[in-house]
Amino acid sequence: MQRAAFLLSSFLIISAGAAGCDRRALTAPTQVVSEQFSGQLAQQGANAHPFTVQEDGPVSITVLSVVRETPPLPEDAPAPDTSQPPSTEDDPTAAIPPPIYIGLGIGTWDGVTCGVIARRTDASLLSSISGTAVAGNFCVSVFDPGGDVVTHPVNYQLEVNHY
Image (cartoon, rainbow, N blue to C red; front, top):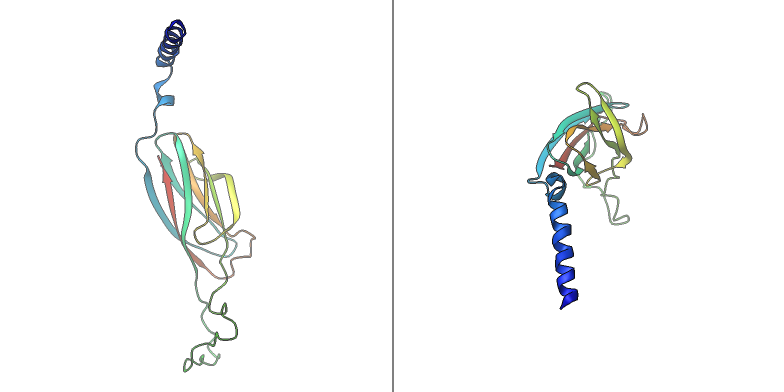
């Protein structure tokens, strides 16, 4: 009985001490903000999309779509044969196009430039990058990961979730 009273009084003292701390550290963020950005990435290009984090908490950026534009055929090129669909009996993966890789990063936004602080150079469909951010101005950077990996313009759409 004496031990239970000691543990209860210790808990109350610790609780009273915690009540004097910064309450922001004890509360969870209130509501997720979801933003979508889209654009076109050119060979050796880079794009920045700024966003503002209102409350400290997790941030994630996901590639929702990435599609390479089909280059136009030269004027003197013969028209493709569309009378028969391409055969995939010998190679079942022949109909699956290879992934398109783009560079994806998160950085701080100063109103003009995106100072990338974390990035990946192998982002493709449904790839993501995530971390924790304090309230402030941030940006998503989308870039040609090798300077010449993107051979034709690439259209992309991203989703950023933060607080």
